[in-house]
Length: 576
Ligand SMILES: Cc1ncc(C[n+]2csc(CCOP(=O)(O)OP(=O)(O)O)c2C)c(N)n1
Ligand SMILES: [Mg+2]
Image 1 (cartoon, helix red, strand yellow):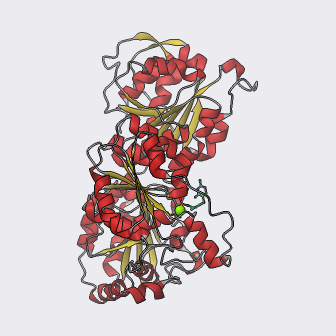
Image 2: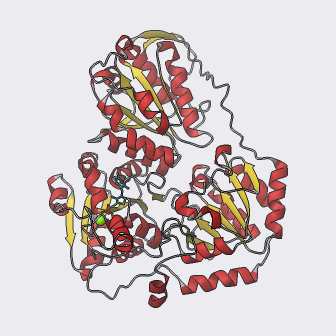
Image 3: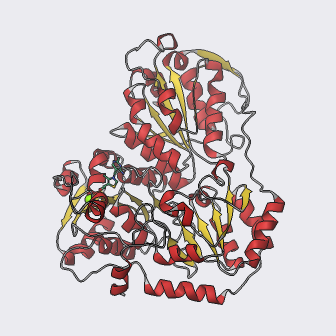
């Protein structure tokens, strides 16, 4: 969102006297905000009073963490900046997990928190917390406003910082006396960010060096992260990959950046990625990383990652380059711009042997599971959702096995279709994320593929979905366990399932009590009709799939191993 391009409530540049809270609301509108999430409290009363008749859709969650995830997913689904509000003290503290989630995944968010009166700050006043101190490590930028004259500019800067460069959450702390104070506004749109500069273009010499390396490469692979989606560069990515003829693998957050139905797609790489992607990375002679950050869930043992490859790294954030892995050809710039430039300089090469080799791995080790059991396999549920939604739904997830099965068995074809907490791995993200995504994309089918224990963490938000008549669908892959942790205990702790089993409620009853539709499925043959009923539901709908309890996610790269040292390949091979 460009701060200059949006329309202003003060657009005529008229000067007028306004309260701080009105200035905030007007600047939000100037920035194009039409939807917000948040929860009230004592020190945000002046702001909420101005929101009472503002032309902004406002969604109140049942817990501020939920509101923050909703704003985050709203941003992920729409490409706009998400906005969340909370009161001081407990309200602000409840945002922390949501802010950290957005920070780790580089999601543009503006959080507004109330603060006690300026004169009380530092006095342990009622509901005082050092919000800027607490949230500094989990925000791209934060500040407290101490003069009403700085308000409009600060809000404008927050949107600019959140949505440019490597995107991220920005928090503004608002003492209540500043919300109440009045000042003269003149409608100016200025910002003061002298040290904040973004390199979008990319160095032309570096781009040429990268293009030459690509043209020379016999075994290249594109490794794509969420940065391509943030940069709205999926068209450019497709054109580039097609022209240079490159296989493409994606990170969890990169899913959707390249159509997984295309033959060049090697799906996800990393700890639970495809064997064919991991092998291709280990054997490639050139790794072209775009908008990705060499996370440890991707690289496995860094020392042995892509051992034969020259590495090109294209990223908007110079601090990401050579942070985890040594890079040979860095290009700092916006993926959309740089991919466009690169495409002009690359040549098509057949690379027959390389694609043949990859096709062999694909055939030998596809994502598979044994569906001959009488129990419901969680992967089968994901496949059924995939088929019945024609691969078109927006999918959100919890964290754990459910998340990995969603990533492995739903094939994504477009950006902003897969919404999941990657970097922080926040259980409880799935349901509020589905709500935020549905608010952003009212005409789409939004399905939360969740874990039972992830759902437990934020299920209260079902009330929010009911209140706002958001027809989200929740598929709980209910294995009773904290399945992913149980899997690690099975494999590495001699099946000592320490504290990973908890009694669950009857989710269908919970859903019905909160005003949603609840369905329980414990027979495999009932899965298709339950999915059908869920998709047809006009109300929020929760389906409790009682799945196989001790199913594992394969393949798996054990922590600290090279990514070609995968467990479970024998199982996949046997199933082909
Ligand atoms: C807030 C939070 N607490 C703890 C964890 C650690 N953790 C990762 S996966 C997992 C289990 C998830 O269980 P469930 O939601 O049922 O998913 P499943 O793996 O069974 O599909 C846990 C406890 C986490 N990721 N997030
Ligand atoms: Mg579970």
